[in-house]
Image 1: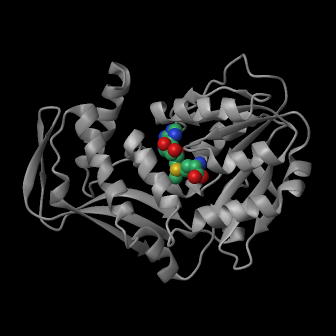
Image 2 (image 1 turned 180 degrees about the vertical axis):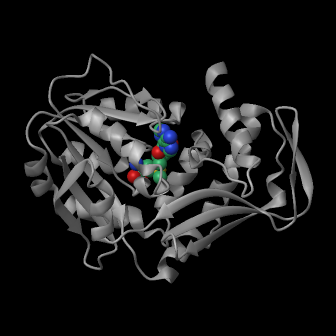
Length: 311
Ligand SMILES: C[S@@+](CC[C@H](N)C(=O)[O-])C[C@H]1O[C@@H](n2cnc3c(N)ncnc32)[C@H](O)[C@@H]1O
């Protein structure tokens, strides 16, 4: 269960999102323990190309990545989830002194961290439960070293273009002038490939999408009936992004903190964006804070791993 202050802030964000002209919910609320596990299931699906593509890029280029990152690295990972891709770095590089996984999904974060401590006893592992959309105070007890933020999975694509700046500011603050940013960014490609990735045939993404309502029920005591919503993923050409929505199947009302919110048949709750970039667009987005020093991609040019340094 979350603390009183966090519950209040969750409630404020939920009410704000559900009372606007286009109903929406912040995608961070997908993630309680069940949501984190469903996301892991998605990453193993045939249609979900980003995870296996990024893993292959990391494995194929591990030595070169190590050279770019330098010596005595403190690896910081906002939104670490299963830390599955990070294991490739922790195993393949001998220059990592400390690892700080940061995630909003606390129970899952701490259980992953305890597995990692067993697997990598020589690396200092310090999990931190925090929301990376706000500034983050790093623990004083971190070992000395070059701070490298690792942000795989194209999670950057979840930010709207007008809010990505705040996150890049948080990262720039974390790494300081001598640090670096290793980031995964998903690239533009055939729309059918994109739509299949977010509308998988087993319905795992649909369950993940509906988990946002289950999570609200658990934390806020709301009584959303997930059977009254359908999962839908669409391509928004103008914004160059996949959007996930929950489509209401029949008129009904749900009470949130004593306020009755009405949902009309066919109306949507917008739950997530996943922006797709060209290399030039991405370089432009990060350019106020970072220079792109190296880009690794796969043969099809579907996904990129990029090494950035502060300006
Ligand atoms: C798309 S998953 C990516 C997981 C992993 N980094 C990967 O590449 O497979 C996003 C992760 O970020 C976490 N997350 C989402 N929003 C967050 C927020 N605002 N603050 C901290 N963690 C967040 C989720 O719990 C989840 O583990």
